[in-house]
Length: 424
Ligand SMILES: [Zn+2]
Image (cartoon, rainbow, N blue to C red):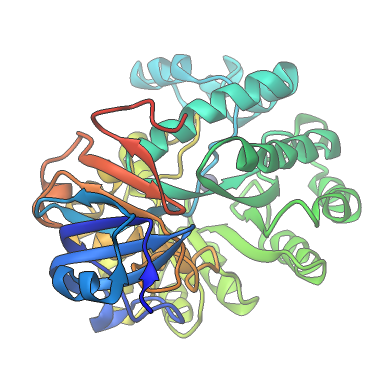
């Protein structure tokens, strides 16, 4: 007897990204889209039931009671995975942007009340309801760009009470709306004023008080490892303590200087090393030999008018690369992952197929979810996006606009360009 499909997408150009559920794409494999022309995806419940040429899928499944979406030749991809964000935050920092454009230095911006600690203050003052409302609005926008899974970091609380509040907000948002949020504890995001010159005491607070309280609220632990922020030694201490409690390590590494962050990430088996603008040859070699994925964030370089990560060198060395928005109120205020794909092509030198792999299967692996999301394969979560585009190159090429036509999340239509009120 044939299995009953509940939803069927037919006549699409499928970029399945199939065959990499157990490992990210790297080297010559990077950008293998697993294309199926005139393809179909059948879904039942929240899962994918069948994928293949339309005629074959129609033979395999019972589609008599299924809702049918005719993709009309459009590009059908796995739901996009945004694997590095600070989406949970309160307020915005456009005043800082204006100051920066007028030539103010980083120190002058701090003196004017800007910088990350101003976001901390804003979050603490706002409390729960405004935080949920603002994040929900961002998540809706992310969905509209084709994102179905979002990593979300804490790190604007910086004390036990507010770090827990941020992670509880992430848990609540998971119940409130269709996107999947993957929680990361990042108490080591900045050093609060009262710990200036005494950062070891703040590290002790993170390890002794915060980690035990957040261990059941987060999947990952992340640290901003950088000169004048958290040292290599401090980062290692926090991440090893987190690992003992079951939180997998991630690292903001080598963003402003080559400090050995990439090597540390590789050494401790971090799931990802992120930013990496200044990663040197040794760091790249260490990543290439490891399972650690390089999560590159070209939107941040673009917005800060700074250098870009050496993606081509990484690719040639065999490093696995993912791309993400780094959506946050300071260094990268955008939810537009399609624009990030454009920057991945123009500024990192990746191909359209590679940037698509970098925001699907490789990003899924950067969240340890390559076995359930990131590709269109039988048994995987029913997350897919249909772009109003004939092929994968059109997405980054026609830049700055939203190409999403429909998004299916966990087997249900969650976004429709022609009916924006479908889910939220
Ligand atoms: Zn970040």
